[in-house]
Length: 233
Image (cartoon, rainbow, N blue to C red; front, side, top):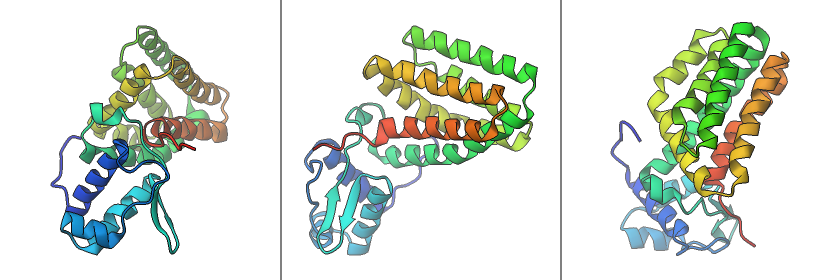
């Protein structure tokens, strides 16, 4: 991620545990070693291990069972480590969480305030994105152009300013998402396009609640396609 920060000990333990989960050294449904064992293995304090496990729980990767310990709940997409360093995984997820709320609100305001020019700009951006998908290209710029068009249609400068200020971080996440999409089943591209189309349709029909819901669904789904991974039986 841009502007990398020095990882804390808890960050480092998080990265190492996530790496073992991705590589299935800790398979889905398996019980993780106790806090004490992990603290000894990594030569850190138990509070440090506890903080790392808390982050894994927040990311939906492990779950705690009272009196039993921590278990692997899900394994993120294995291809993640092909595109992004482990220390960036949590930051990318947090970026998507932020976007869910901000862009959902922007879409609602866009549905209330958009004019015909806004609709034309959004539709043009969608068509460019659709073309890049058909060409099997990453289309990061096209995706961001569409989301920014929605924010600008809100007629609230703060929404578009936030997205513009986070352009590099958002592009990083979109590139990762698109890279994984291109490796996935063919229908995934059509699904992503349909999610974007649903947002624009709700805005065009002046349905703010639906516009907010469809935007939140789209960004949540994009996050989940990367980070929820498999929950194997």
